[in-house]
Image (cartoon, rainbow, N blue to C red):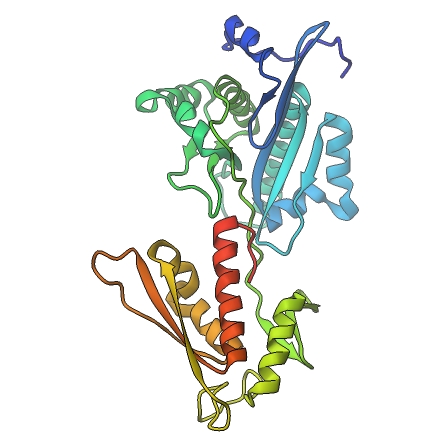
Length: 351
């Protein structure tokens, strides 16, 4: 699209807003939005983030990346797909408004085609709707819902699409999922209206973007090196963890994972055991324990240390953690606990 070309300007966007936009070169929808004045009027560059699961991403990429290449060329939008061994991926679409909507149309029609193809092998007679999930800063969701739900009701009624704003923020972020479902045409109209709301109500404060976490992978120690399994490959783990493990192995005769030892793994009569205490805020203790104790058991097994978490005491905002073992066991347990806390606070995924 040339600098002077006319762009899509939504009919519901008041002229006063266009004036306002010119004075805000760094508006945000998702991560980035820029506005600049060109000869033909306002040229708005949007960035929209979509959350997709693996099968949907595969459909967008296509064989040897042909589908996404065609979408990029025909729409003129930049389409980036997040890396990583994750069940969910972020698809980021950036470009002028008309390019964004062309890309959305192509994605919506591709998903409809997938639904039709899957139905040819299925006894189902009613065609399910196309569904897309946007990732939107939580600070903009109030404007999208409107007073008493008035805005979201208006969008549903005028486009025929179903729109749901998630009540909770996505993990380790300040973003929420907005699910849109309906026919491809209804979805395109709905996205246009959502973009208008986002333009009129930029995010407040900093946005912590949602990063899907990798599928949880076991850590394996072999030959003094720590590895995680990704697909069919063993990927060496960070040096710090490997060094701590080597130190633990030198000081502590405990067997490899999977073998049983009547004594506590990592504790032996010949190695001096010591005790270390930590205090952790109550609201972060969950990430250390994990669902049904999976994370704390993993930390116990990997470090070879005994780890006890005290019960919550009334009126206290902290919990006591007692780690018992050799100095190397304790170091490794502390490292693993800190890694869990860091990944929870920063949202960087991790161990």
